Every structure is written in C-alpha cells, then in structure tokens.
Image (cartoon, rainbow, N blue to C red; front, side, top):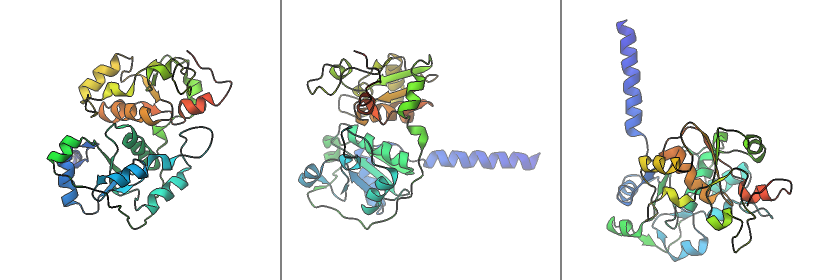
Length: 288
C-alpha cells in the first residue's frame, strides 16, 4: 500500500510539474522580449505579405506569408497538400519540434490561421504574439527591415485530424441537434450581400458570430470567462459539437482558438474548406 501511495504521489508531482512548465498559447510583448533574450533557437514567424515584411518586421523574424500556404485554383484559400506545406516550413528553417512564435498585423486573423496549419501538421510548440505596437514599444522590441534566412531543416508531418472537419462529414451533421455551426464572417457575407459578391448566404443552420466577438477592442483575445459568456449568447456551450467556418478559414481560426484552446471546449472543429469550398458545389444548399 505504501509503495502504491508513493507511485501516486510521484505521478501527481509529475503532472503538476508538467502543468507548471506548460507553454502558454499566447504571450505578451514583455514575455516575448524576455524569451528572445533567453532562447537563441526560437523561431519567430511574420505571416504577412512579403512587401509588408520588407517595410518593417520584428528583428530576427523570418517571413512565411500565409497566402504562400494556399493552392492555386478557383476555390479560394484551400491549403496545399501536407507534404508540400511541410516542405515550405522546412526550407524556411521550421521543424515540427521548433519553438515557434507567430505574429501578424495585430488582427489575430493571420497568425491564428498559420497556428492552426502548424498544429494540424503536427507542430508541438506554437505560440501566438499579439502585435500591439504600444506594448511592443514599451517592451523595447526592436524592429528592422533586414530580412532573415535560417538554415533549412526537416518538418515531419503528424496530422492532427481532430482539428478539422471535411465537407462530407459536415453535411452528415447538419441536422444534428447537438451541432452548433458558427459563421465567423462579416454580417453582409452571412446575408449574401457583400460588395465583393463572393457570398450568396450561409450554410444551413449556421449562426452568425463574427470573429471579433472573442477579441478585445485592441485585438487581443478576451479572457477565458468572457469568451465562455460570449459564446453562450450564440448557443455555443461546452456540451455541444461546435464547428466554425468563414469564407476561407482565416477568421474561423480565431474562433477555433478562442473556443477550443482558451475557453477549453472539448468538441470544436474548423471546417478548413470553408464557405469557398461549400459554394463551389452546385448542389450544396446555401441560405439567405
């Protein structure tokens, strides 16, 4: 019995230690500045377009534009095959075991999108940095125009299928009473009234929940309890099966992170094919 108690205590201590050293999903500018100084192997990724990166970026950051991860074709925003994505990251010096910090223009849309891609591919340590310039200046994070190139490495794919739901599986769920389908786009897109005329409406049964609902006025993610409270207003509660989507998967990635990673809802998936894929099939129903 004493031996059993010792084993239980050891396991408890081990789990507690793991919890204490677990890496945060999101870090602030001050923590980031300290991390840069202490970890010389840190990989910082700026996911904005190359011309934006060239104008100014965080010192030491490499550039992997989020759009470089998409296929060419008529259906907007579809990811390239896993092997090709792994090749892109590997050539840029990013492995599946690298300690990675991603930032965008401060909107949380593009870094969240690339975070989702990396986690889907099997990256083990990916953190988001919110680009709040006031906080970054206060933390004295240096900016530069000098490009950064890292030595190529290997990114080994280990797909995490639980993050995604494909179109066929989603179709089969549409009539389920346990499903909450959240549309993270703008209201005019949801209504099929957008000026770009890319949307004719929304998926059957979808509830409009703009991605900014889970962000503060400065673009940071809201605290856990606020996200849970906000999500409940749209019918998204922990016991439901939640699927998030948008036009191409960018805005929906923000909702995914908020609900799954911050709020801790256990059953959340992102429809990566998004409205763009759904609308490309003539027989798929669309509601206004």
